[in-house]
Amino acid sequence: MQPSGVSGVTDAKALFAPVKGNVIPREQIPDETFASGVLGDGVGIEPEAGEVLAPFDGEISSVTDTRHAVGITGPEGMEVLIHVGIDTVNMHGDGFELFVKEGDTVKAGQKLMTFDTAKIMAAGYSTTTAVLLTNSDDYSEFRVLKTGRTETMEKLFTI
Image (cartoon, rainbow, N blue to C red; front, side):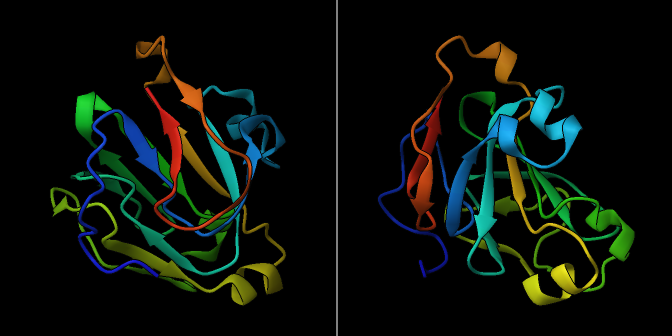
């Protein structure tokens, strides 16, 4: 686990893995809206641990009332959505805890939220976490750098 405010994570054109687990292509996220790319390009992560870290230095642009998703604006104007689980909005926040609010400034590696994977699965939902660059169309150089197992704060994609 990385400490809050990981030093040395300064690549202004990169997004670092906010969740530890197995990275899958966006098209394999088990939700048509995410998989189709209508909300932006990115990846899914099948989490090994129930913690979401800030993928870069930025500002929290949105949080859901149900605590299952966070929007963050970062370097070079990147707008990222981190959405934990599929249809987890139906859990009404049960099993989720937010550590940030809209307008907060965060550092790469800072804890944004925790979630209870067992509770999500017991409710019948997938824990797959969408990590999407919602304005990916603005970046002709957008590239996913890895699939497969990742630790938190490994470089995931670049713009």
